[in-house]
Structures are given as C-alpha cells and as structure tokens.
Image 1 (cartoon, each protein chain N blue to C red):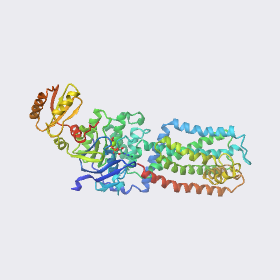
Image 2: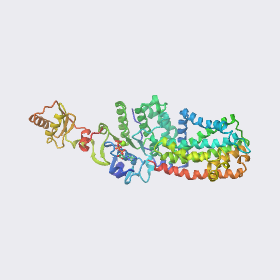
Image 3: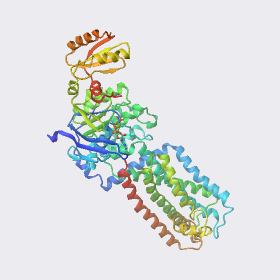
Image 4: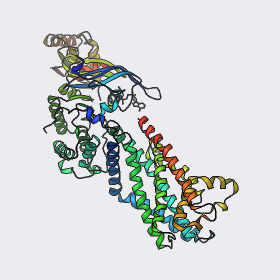
Length: 314
Length: 279
Ligand SMILES: Nc1ncnc2c1ncn2[C@@H]1O[C@H](COP(=O)(O)OP(=O)(O)OP(=O)(O)O)[C@@H](O)[C@H]1O
Ligand SMILES: [Mg+2]
C-alpha cells in the first residue's frame, strides 16, 4: 500500500524564526502517477510544505518520504528524483533560455549529449524556440515562468513539485501547461502542485488537500469536496446590497450549509435543486423581496473553499 | 505541446556519484562558466570595475607620489604591488554581491533542490571572481607600465608575486561568501564588506612604509595579511631592496602563504556550512 505512494509526509510542523507557525501537523500522501492539489489562501503554508518536501528546509518535527527515501536523512538521494518549479521563477537573468536549461541539465549530471537534446526539446515544447538564444532579461514574466517549469523537467523527474505553476500565465499557456502535466502523469510522473485556481485543481488533481494556517481543513477528490456542499447552488441576484443582505437572512434555513453573499448576489448550496428553488422563491415572495436573476448551477471548488475557510481564494 | 517523458532510470547510481570528486569539479566548472558568462554579458560592470583600480594607479602616481618618500626604491615600483593587492581584495567583494543576488533571485533555492555538489555554488562563484581578478591584474599591469612601473626581477618571479596576490584574493572570496549568504540583499552585502577592507588595505604596507605609522598601529600593520602579501609581491617583483631592509624574501613569502592557506582552511568550510544552513 505504501509502495503505491510516491510522497508520504506525516505530521509536518514548521515554525519560522519570529514565531510564525507555518505548518501545524500537516500530513500529505500522493499516489504514484497522480496529481495532488494543495490548495489554500495566502500564507496557508503551501510553499513551506513544498520546500520541506524538496529538501530545501527541514521541518521542526514530522517525517517525509519521497519514493521511499527519507527527505530529512537522505536529502541527496531525494534530489536526484525530484523536479521543482518554485513559486518565484528561479532562472539566471544573464543566461539565454537554452543556457539556463543546459545548466540545469549539467547540474543534474545528465550525459553531455542528452543535455543539449533535452534543452532543445523542452524549449520548443514550451513554445520558447524563438527566444531560445536571448538572455532572460528580454523575456516577459510568462516566458520566464515557462522556462522555469521547463527547467524543472530537464532531468525527467519521477516526482514533480510545482508551486503555483500557472500564476502569471495567459489562458493559452495555462492550457498548454495543463496538457503537459496530464501527459507527464499518464507516463508515470507524480505531481504535487499548489494553486490558487480551483479550476486548475478541479481539472488536474485526483486528490485535493485544503490547508489553512498550516493545517489540513479538508481533503478528498474534487467530486467529494463538491458533494459536501450538496448537488446544486442557487445563485440569486438582487437589485442592490441591502436587498441581498435581507434575502440572506430569510434564505438561511434552506440548505444544509449557510448561504453566502457576494455583493448583490446570494449563493445557496442545496441538495435538491428544483424543489429548493421553488421553496426559495416562495420564501422571497412572502418577504416581499424581488430577485433580479435566478440561476441553478453545479457547485465549483470556489464554493467549497468559501464555505470551509470563509475566505475567497483571491 | 506534447510531453515526452520516460519513467525515471535507476537513480541510485546518480546519487552514489554525487560527491564523487569528478562531480565536485564538474559542477564547480558549470557554475564558474555560468558566472563568467554574466561578467561577459554585462560589459558595463567589467568596465567600471576596472576604472576604479586604474584611477587608483593614476591618483597615487600623480597625486600622492610626490609627497611620499620611500627609501631605496622609486614610488611607482613601491605602490604598484600595493595597488595590486588592494584591487584584488576589493575585487573579491563581488563574491558577496553575486551570492547575495543569487539568494535574492531565488536561484540558490533551485540549486539546493538539485543533485549537484554542495560546494559548487561557492566554488563556481569564487573561481569566476578569481578569473576576473586575473583580468584586472593584467589590465593594471599594462596601465602601470605606461606610467613608469617596471619589474626588476624576472618574469617567473613576477608571476610568482601575482600568484600570491590572486591566491590571497581567492581566500578572501570565501570570507565574502559568508557575508553574501548572511546579508539581506546585495547592496547590504557590499556595504558590509567595506568596513573590513578599508583598514586592512590602508593600514598596511600597500601604499606607505609601515615605519611611518604611529607605533601602536605598526604592530597591526606589520603582521596583518595585506602587508605580508604586498611585501611578498613587492619583493618578488622588485627584488630584496623592496623589503626596505626588514626580513628576507623567502621568510616574507612563507609568512604570506601561511596567512593565505590559513584563511582558506578556515573560511571555506565556514562558507559551505553557511550555504547549507541558509534558507
Ligand atoms: N522564511 C520565512 N521566514 C519567516 N516566515 C516565513 C518564511 N516563509 C514563510 N513564512 C511564513 O509562513 C507562513 C506560510 O507561508 P507560505 O509561504 O508557506 O504560504 P503559502 O501558502 O505558500 O502562501 P502564498 O499563497 O501566499 O504563496 C506565512 O505566514 C509566512 O509569512
Ligand atoms: Mg506560496
């Protein structure tokens, strides 16, 4: 059973100098050849978890194994099987795109000939062939980000860590990267990715762990997390904030989870869509509140996130 | 985009080789190359870092030389070895600046997650800075020749003097590496380095004979490494007269080398351990 897990972290705790408790007994398991999405608001501890698993910093307590190797006792061995694209692009401004990739290949101790071929292959895979021989100073933010991710793939790592990989990418590049990740996983790579985009976790991740204040606050498949909310979300719009606030009051008893308000929009998660819709309209009518729009939709991970943390993702 | 990724090969082999001496050297060379490319790509930096030592040569030659009287030897020949030492010592500050920049930009973070040798980042930086110092020494030797500096020994002896200077700067680089890895940013790294260097380079025999200093300062100035390195370089470039009657060439060189090797033995492990702990 353990052999099916590429990443096993138990009770990771980390306090930074100054007293910030960044991780508080966090446990993570990632099955081989799957994607785990680590989700959480700013400062939740996502990057700290990634830095511990990639041997950059040591936890105060807890254990972590990558493909059976102890991250704390045998970091050197762990480094030879992982790839990391950190939250901030870690690339050399003075080198060209190709030179950056070759440097990473050399430092991964790949054979010389392979380094060259691999660098070329990745540079075109990430749509940077035109800029291959330009110093990174001339790259845009998104190009830099793509090169950084390409660099993490040079050594064909068995376990890949991507810390907010699509932040700063345009929709096209984001889609391309999702495809790359899906292909890698199909071929056996294990991926742990952190993200602020629930759509991303929804599409890529088999398992999701939601963290806040360094603790796990929810865990499951995207489907399971959504099911916690009920089957349907009623999205009811009103003329202005005040009316929406009043509506929030009268709609409180409708679903198993309290409704939320975003401006003049009220969202009510419910189990039985049509029946609850009728009910909602009846309640509003008897309170003499006029909705301006009324929609039924499937819950998104955003709704899940909002209901668990009480915060939006952005 | 299409991904082409095979399952990982047997990784234990790569791991076993990690600290293999071959990889220690190769990784250091990879990092040296990377740093040298940066020096070549930013010609402004190379230009301005050579302007300062050239300015020193001209200032000491034409502003101070008239006022400073050194027995047995012309002042140009006395000051040039001193300017060499001062230049390479200040040149080694770029080690602290470069490392602080790499830290700031998150590059060290990436390097720390790679299966490369633990010393390569530091070895690559110090070696690149050594190469830069070689270039600057060659340049100011040329400028020195134009303003009257002459070697009065032989080519080999001159090169021996240059060798000691460069080794000294290389040892200092490891010290500046510790500063660079401790500083919050590259500007601070630079500012932190100067208060160390000014007393070392000026309260020395670099520009004036130590005998002209007050007694309490002579004790420090006579025994600190910059003086011994400057004296050695001077003796090797200009002959025994340049020692102004104190000590032999051999003894001076040996003392300088003891300093250099001692600094290297103490500072390099310090820098590596600092690198391991930095986060
Ligand atoms: N090097 C550090 N020194 C001190 N505190 C730190 C350090 N790194 C992170 N922290 C603190 O630890 C907590 C977790 O930070 P972390 O970077 O892991 O969050 P995150 O989930 O990645 O957030 P974001 O979504 O903003 O990237 C934060 O409160 C942060 O301020
Ligand atoms: Mg983060």
